[in-house]
Image 1 (cartoon, helix red, strand yellow):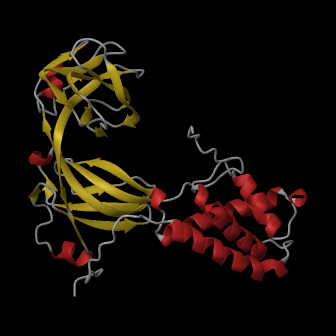
Image 2 (cartoon, helix red, strand yellow; image 1 turned 45 degrees about the vertical axis):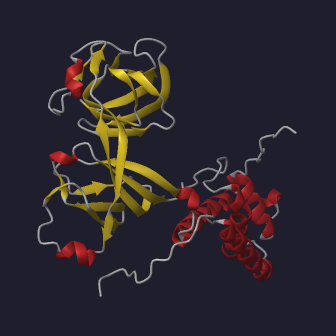
Length: 350
């Protein structure tokens, strides 16, 4: 028997609104633009409520944040709600023979962040060849000017021919900004390079090809612990972190403050993200299929309460349907791995 891919029919925001208002006693034929706008507002409020439940496994994502010497505060993207776990990772940098289409390729591998390889043509390549094949598992690029970095990471088994793309990056970055890529399934190869596909030539201060990653778990501090540190600017490699949850997103305060020994370190952060807001009834919403019925039931109950032309007599039934649907969805929002109990934890020191 041949396995066929599961064809899950997209459930758009409009279909969600249509079903929810029908349950609230407003037939689809009587839907107005005011109904839709009110429903969009309520969907976004539901998304905020789901974030507060803190069980959305599909919104737990890994991020790689660079360490910058002298930077004590590490900002996070605005879509981050909470940091769960953090490790510090370091690679072994492999020394090879630099090459480039133009400019001095050695500047990208000299460990000096003041120098940079400046290419003069579009579509250039910058990389290293090795006498023995290297399985590169991490690539870091330190930009040489503010630019939209658009590159492919490629390898060649013999170091000269048949270059194969393994990963791609397209991101607008400021000058002196690190961007790190994890290479999953990378083979051992004698040649590694980045190939520019952007609209400007490459300006690269450092290009880092590394392997043999080492990660250590960093201990989180509460406010009492962080505040009690007598020297919050002590230099070194990061060991601890405190999370400040501001209105515009959390910030990490790290200790020790990264110094030159931490120039190539990364912070591997597992975060909980906000759900993407809905702005149009034609879009799909940022919820997995297993939550479709629960979100519909939540919306139906809210609209029955807030829309004046809804049938409020249905409200008790909608409350019961919401409780049942949400309970089922929460029960399936699970990680089947073993559970570890760590007793005696508290938000502040006793």
